[in-house]
Length: 266
Image 1 (tube, rainbow, N blue to C red):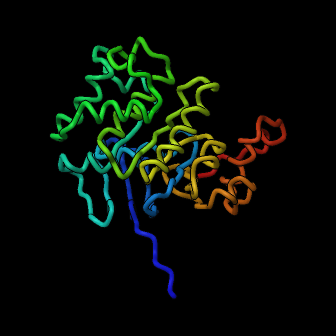
Image 2 (cartoon, rainbow, N blue to C red):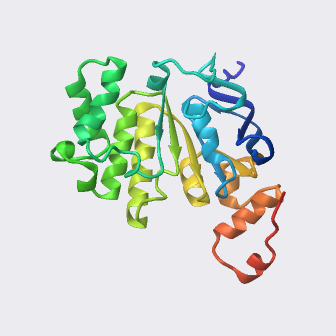
Image 3 (tube, rainbow, N blue to C red):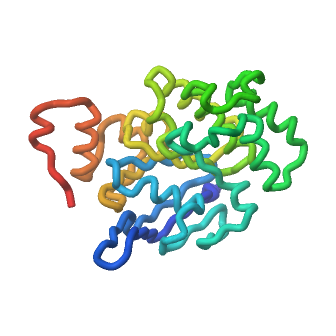
């Protein structure tokens, strides 16, 4: 019996993003291609400025200045998205305080997206998503400044999940949090992925986070994917590209010999 191929949730082909114009233009993403199966968590790792977040902004619809091809669950997606697109694809941002309206309560933040999409049974949905992300019901009518960093990120995750997306984009979801809280949020995301059968794209500069969360990872440098490998190879430190090898060495901690041997790959 032949194996049934996995359904492709996200396919990106020859993606390019350029910021600025003329002599001041900067190629943030150059010829990037990858495909992600339904239910997979795919990691994108690289230094700051390597183009990771720019890819998420294209997929989410926040950036309309791009070229290439994007397919979501078998449908080719253009630069302008219909309202219903945002029920399928949602994004959780790096800074949970900056991404939440400071003058709106948790209840209002969760309610607004449902109102835009015309979703019914809103009270039940709010109660369920608060339970799923581990937030006490008494926090529902508080403002973001009355919450801890971890609680704010749980609200941001709840805001995305209440739309019942199939694809969740995670842009450095723990980097703004205390180290003691990061593991809690990562474990929560792992549980939610299974509970809701999500396909996830996780952007991070932290190789340990990527190895913990993802089945496969793309390594980016200067806007290009230099290598794609599975999480087992990442954990074992097995890589063929010199930049990936250098990134792995840096992730092990500061070493004077490693630092002096650093090469700025073009």
